[in-house]
Amino acid sequence: MTQDEQKQAVAQAALKYVVDDAWIGVGTGSTANFFIDALAGIKSRIKGAVASSVKTAERLKGHGITVDELNNTGELAVYIDGADEVTAHGAMIKGGGGALTREKIVAAASRKFICIADGSKLVPVLGKFPLPVEVIPMARSYVARELLKLGGQPTWRQGFVTDNGNVILDVAGLSIVDPVGMETAINQIVGVVTVGLFARRGADVVLLGTDAGVDTRLVKG
Ligand code: 5RP
Image (spheres, helix red, strand yellow):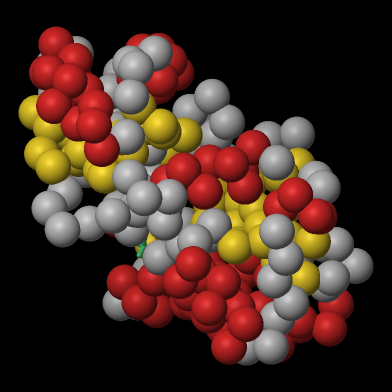
């Protein structure tokens, strides 16, 4: 299977985790886009969706799927999203598309997190993919210096502004052997809005694309 076919396959497989008559959280990126397209086929079964980005909201609405604010829906039954890297334990790097803050908020407000990814995203140790960190613009240089102290090589994602009006530093060179510890440490840096490490609240289920089909690699709870 090609990478896109794998993305499509996991997106389709995620439909079985959609809860009838509920609000569901929907992620951002090319794999999430395949999921949105698949969700359109069963849209009458759900109340609607909370989007993790402006782009996702637009795609959902384009399919005639009701979109509402998280403040109006309360707790979500499930959140379905892709990842840039994921471990067998369900810890992830996210934010390649720059939507990490809203993704983390929607994930936190959801009972279950279903990660959908092609097989190339499974890694033994997180960190080869540069870790995105959303930062308040005036704190950019300060935060970059603090990230250097943690052993990373931050690069300003030029010309990119998040849906929240902030900037992103992509941090290369980290070998994240303790994802929860690293997430906590980066969260402590003043000026950081969100770090794209999803370890404290990782995935409950990881649906991975493989040549043989969809592999359910992890099930919590
Ligand atoms: C966006 C994300 C995406 O989930 C991540 O970048 C994976 O994207 P894709 O499905 O296109 O590979 O975190 O902020």
